[in-house]
Amino acid sequence: MEQKERRKVWFVSDTHFSHPSILYFHPWRRDACGITLEELQADKIAALEKHDKWLIDLWNSTVRKQDEVYMLGDFCLGNRVKTEEILRQLKGRKHLIQGNHDKSLHGLERYFESVSQIKEAKFTNNQFKFIDPNETFCVEMSHYPMLTWNRRPHGTCHIHGHCHGGIDSWNAESKELRLDVGLDSSFANGSLVEVEQLYNHFCGIRDAAGCKTFQEYQEWLMNNQGFRM
Image (tube, rainbow, N blue to C red; front, top):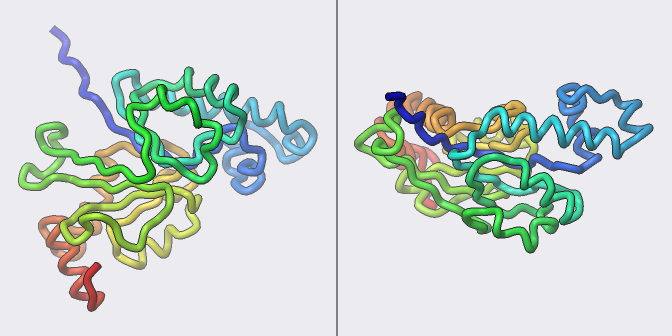
């Protein structure tokens, strides 16, 4: 008898479906879906159709029906009809953490397991064997990056979107357990982020300081910073 493949958990932000400006600001997206700048300038509607199809294919080649997806805002800048049309095509059980460009999702809450401004998720070794059995991996999610967040001193990690990779170096230099998971960030690199990938990233920061747990790491970091928050 075949063993059922385990559920996966994914994180993504700033997909920006149906948003022409995203194709100007992030040329890699044009390259990914085979659009030249000249084609975009000549026919934005056709260019957006290619972009949206590429994003849908990327999503559905990654996410399965039983998987869980945490969407950290700025999903679609089309109208409500277009937004619903896209939502219907996307696999997975979705959680929405609202961004500043999510007006078209109003009235479409039925497509989500939850809708919130801030969301906390906890993952344990019982769910995923790669997680240390002596620790719970806690993640605090919001669209915007936060300087501090709930239960930070206890080892909770923070992920966000909104910045399109613009503060990646600042996040790294701060040594905080904070990360941009937006599609345009250097970490996501044009893909959805899987929970094991996320966990390993934060473990790398923790381990480099010689700490055994995320809480121990946060204590070490706060002592070095000279203040607690």
